[in-house]
Image 1 (cartoon, one colour):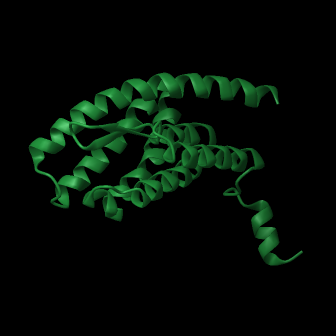
Image 2 (cartoon, one colour):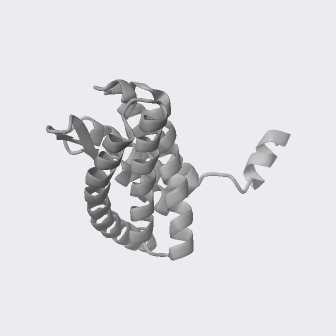
Length: 179
């Protein structure tokens, strides 16, 4: 056995088969969501989209840990970048960077609270605040517009993600325990 394989075999950072399955399932779900109106729900009078794309990221972080959450967050960010219809989402600092933090924040919030609703709220807020802050800092929109969009989208997205994350995590945790 080589030195590298000994190191990998004893490594605490190894990703289990279950975690890889969760990452693949939620990554695939994120890709499917990004190609349908369910992933990005247009708000015509504002010219922006409300999103459900952060939900698989939060679920991935809760079920698989921060690495899985970050992996699914990358898929979310890249899909946002690829389907950009506004200049700010064509900017990787807006489209990708905040999405990497959703899984990390969600995981550690879940670890502290042991309640799926709390990381749903924190993960959703991380997405909304992160994206809107980058949009403002990069000079794409004035503060008043950013605050208005954050209030409208953020509130709706928190409610939706809380229900969905709670239900999916409860079902998946029961499934994982029985298999």
